[in-house]
Length: 247
Image (cartoon, rainbow, N blue to C red; front, side):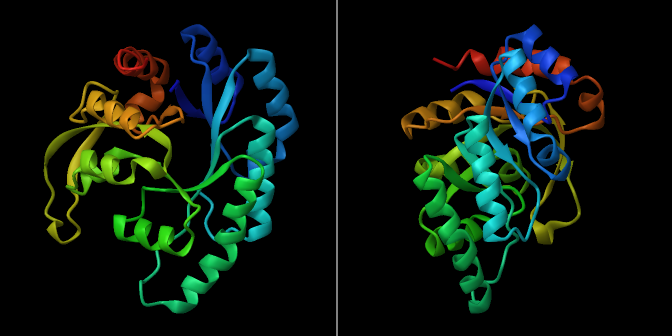
């Protein structure tokens, strides 16, 4: 496991990575970064920074889209491409068939070239994960415990249950600030904060990932206005806390 962070491989980010000795980034993959692939490959090589995974927020990707992005992931040396499918109803058989037709061949193609196609944990409920894994058994999971904490779920139990499927992990701590009134959704009010300064037990998570045989890396995702403006400070604090648990 290596500590990294989410980035578009901008020069200022890679300068921070170089100063702090951070070996990898998670490359945020979208229309703009896709158009700069050759330039970003050369820049990362220049700075000696690797790529743990490519991650996109794009929804409704086609099979051809996924294959192109998997090919890019391979060129960057990542282990996984993380995509963001939307949830669908368990009884919606047409959606099931569409999901299988797109993600089934894409997951097989990923395996053929030595990668894993993974889905976000965020924006989806464990019931959605289970349904997607049932439809396409070769899929992996990008896990972010912060969203499970917000929803009042047991993130440690989720790491145990889904550990063999987890291929990429987001580091994003949260501090509990009280209950919201929207009880119907189960969401509690949290504020994002550097790893080790919030309520998530990162030592326990990383120990459970070791027990699950996790082979991926970790990506800090800065996620609040203050820490966006002080990303290097966020990285310094989080890196110091997380790396005490890395063998």
